Image (tube, rainbow, N blue to C red; front, side, top):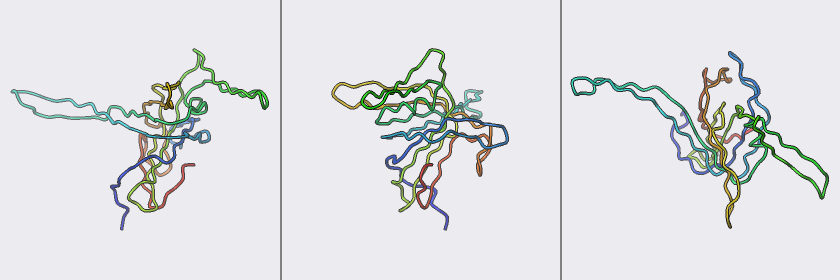
Amino acid sequence: MALSHNTKLFGIDDAGIYKVLTDPAGAPPTYAGKVDIIGAQSMEMTLATDTKELRGDNTLLAADSILKDLTGKMLYGKLNFDVWAAMTTMAVTDSGTTPTQKAVMSLAQSDSPQYAKVEGQSKHVDYIVGDVHLLVPKLIPANFLGGFADENYKLQEFAFTAVPLIGTVTGGPANLWLQFVANETAVAIV
């Protein structure tokens, strides 16, 4: 019997982001190593369509839609310099020795957003020992939200726009934009 095509999704158990190194036509993309998104709280996606209507004689004659864009956002608990660095050309510099160690994340006007891949995992699904992964193989950041909050934890966030791959992932279609993967037995994000 095939794995069910529907399941509940409750919570996010793991998330990672990877800088896109190459995306060659006709070949699989390559990525830098995983950067854990610590304290992942949610990963949301919105698939928008562009719908056109043909009207005449005061009636709707036809309607057609195309996929327009895929946007999303990741909400997470801990500020992570490496997450920001995975999506930009900004620098993170470590210096000093205990007790004067320092880590500095610097954004210059000349820095720019970079392509990245993001993947989230939920183990709270209908498959008893399974999971569901949400994978965006290529995205460009739209904005970052960070800072402090008065008498509370400040949640961190980045929003993004997905971009179809030029290359082809192993076992996937050309121009992959988004992929949900349901596993009967849970598979860790690597």
